[in-house]
Image (cartoon, rainbow, N blue to C red; front, top):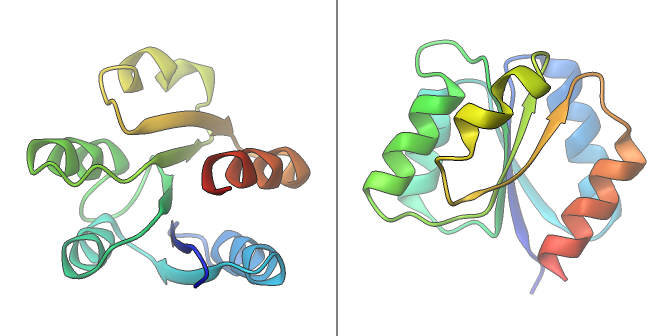
Length: 119
């Protein structure tokens, strides 16, 4: 059974790129455009990893993380952000955050990190 990844980003190009890469690596991928949609998926079924954009419409990435930890939905998270280092300290409060990747990120580096979490 393949590992399940939820990719959450309001930019269609990033969602599609990550989806294609992770499917090619043998993972099952679901995508969401907003934090609200991400929470709906995360409460409806189980994922092995969430790739989460920090700046999202409706419900931002920080609020998604806050709600997941509050409700003990302890899925490992990788946060993607154009702010990179600026948000690292803020995100240290969330135990589920494994890494923060600054956009634009090196896709090979992201892929290796995802593999290290899921394998």
